[in-house]
Length: 224
Image 1: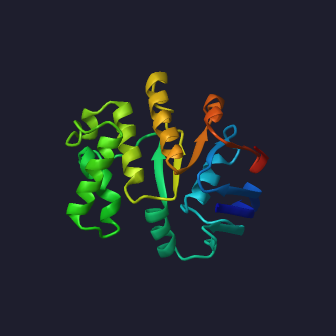
Image 2: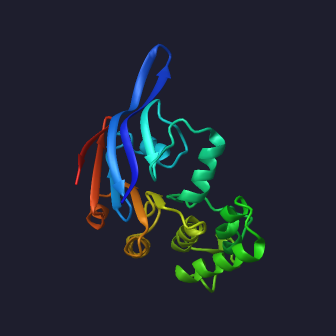
Image 3: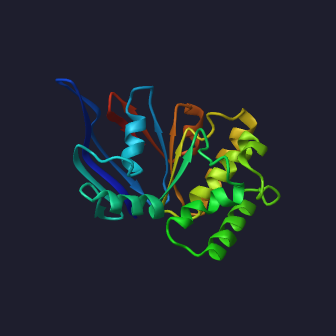
């Protein structure tokens, strides 16, 4: 089932009198349940593509469809709702709020959806248990290891049951063993039906994907 489609998408930045195409006419199709690896060297357009897919930015031209809905011309308020409900984000730097414990960090996205506190706390506890942190739910980020912080981030990304998990270099700040554990969680989520889009420099991680998209100079060079 088609989940995300980009049709001849451009992202153009103006630098003085010069226009720079960070994304230069990309077309791609991601189906529900895919595990996609988005790879390419620095400056290839990976970050820009991630921002577009994650509805953090809008394309300069072209069309983007999510579940058949053209999101290209939607107002920011609608895009914010899509980000909150349809897309879960996992970042290399974890992006946890230092003053909130693990439970509160995980539950936070539900707060913005006006979900009652008892429901979001129950859901957050279930997810922390799912990622192996049942004994760390009241720990602050500075009391957790890097791998534990990333597990919290994964749980947070799942809290609103999104269609897509967008993981930006999720093992970049982790040692190899911990990174493997995090990737195993993502693989397991994919087996359970979640669509994973992994942005990475690490070609080893592409072995886990069923579709590889290589970016170079803002263009999709191949898709497998």
